[in-house]
Length: 110
Image (cartoon, rainbow, N blue to C red):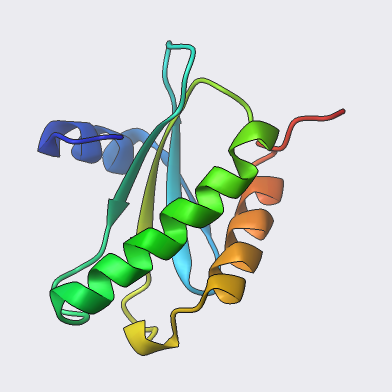
């Protein structure tokens, strides 16, 4: 996981954005042999319970595709502000993540 503010800023400033219907993912190559994940949900979107729910959904979807994606990247997931946080559901986020990783060519070929 990305933990520090400067780590998030580095990925957001230098990473390439990929847009889905509900989420945006900034992806930046790192020189390490593992992926680092960061999730940021604005506090303006809802209370902590709902924001944490969205983070859990994103984290769980990432875990499901983690074995299929390339290694050596920093990723920051953002919830789009124009979407109501109450619309968050597992299937919508799953479709978005699949679409984004295909667009970014992050899926490993068998």
